[in-house]
Image 1 (cartoon, rainbow, N blue to C red):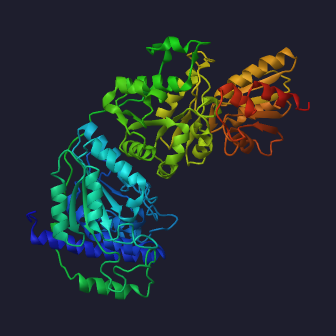
Image 2 (cartoon, rainbow, N blue to C red):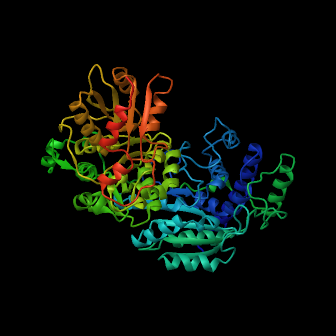
Image 3 (tube, rainbow, N blue to C red):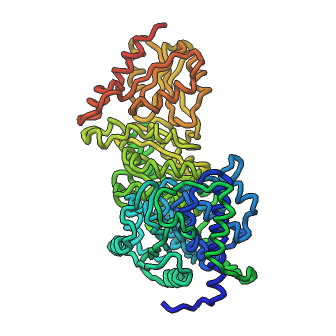
Length: 630
């Protein structure tokens, strides 16, 4: 590679790397915690990115065509804050507020700070998020590139390789990764140590262009980024050999210093040592602006376009009251229609599109359908990247397989990413496939996610209408739990469903108990109601389709006329499920709550046999009601 960058520009980058190192030490020492040695290994790379590579309008961090930088090795976030300080974007006071409870400059990156692209720090996720952002640029016809800085130790995570394989599959040439190969993880040497050729072999095997550099040679770093920008039809990985703690002779390339800030009385000597070692001067007036091209996204979507009307759907006849349709199929129809109305809606699939019915969306909007194959962790990360760039992504798979991606969902929650997730084939009611395929933990996982919404529709109309609600929810993750079996349509197509709502299906002024159910158990509750009425026993029935947030007021109101007794019934484990949600909401209210849930390890069998086995069918509900004392 031929050097074209001037000596003055190289000197500026080296000078900025020095100042970034010093700022990283100052911030971590002031905080009394953090990871300074991880910052020292990456400083030259980050300086080159922020002062040579990134085309970025710092006055407008949300500008659609800004290049994106994701710090996947999030523990090194002081190096990002230091770069922003050196660019004049943040003040010294803000830099030194690192890790303070009132500061946006947190211990690992979150989008609370507008210049942070994503919440990172749970390692192995940044490359997938970056892939989602790169796919967004391709779809929108924008020229921005996405750069992801990865730690060598984190590349042991399988999610890195899920992202690597999919990026190569889609020939994403606007995605550039950089591995900071500093040889050490937290407690020991990284898997491949300084065997740089192993990283090269692995990424090339996955279909990436690789460029090997000395990660502390500014001229080489510049050439590598310039070359990466010219790579076509494949993503590029810059493999940088670096040293942890680079610049400080007593700790450089030595184990045992991870996550250990220096003491205040040590700092002056360390800064003096850095200035002596990197004795470079530069003219600040030569800092390039590198503004992005003035381009705007081609897509747009009005609030009106996110509204759904079943009566105008091509499959409206399937939603007639009394007809049978599964909630997973209703989800598929609603999503496909939403996609035709709004060109910012995307669907992502994990090789189950003919089960989740996202194939309906693919048929209508193939350019916004992303097949992620059997790699659910990466699917969620890619969806996060799309959402962070303003898209409305719906990612779906079997409910049980979201447990594999829970860390990615958790991080999306921390970043308040508006992900829309649909887990199909939930519960023992899927039948003969057996317990490995039954989503019985998903409600508890999703309820525990910050700012999340958890929805569990019982019929086709409610599922269809709740897709609209998910599309309009932008404060965090929303999750729909859908059912494999066809169930009767309970509601008229003009029925209104809201996040946090419920439906009282049966009630009187003197009920023996109130049955609270969601999903398929609503139909079991209604069957139990009919049989109890035949015996002269009155009960109320509530369809609690919104598990989080919960309609506490309706529960209390109906319980007041139902012997102050509620029986919850759910096709889910009791821990963290519907029953515990109701019990928590009504604690200290004087309402007695009995919960029917999946308490025995399921097995293969018919849906009917399994629901009876777990005592969540109509007969079990009747039994529970008849044991209630008036």
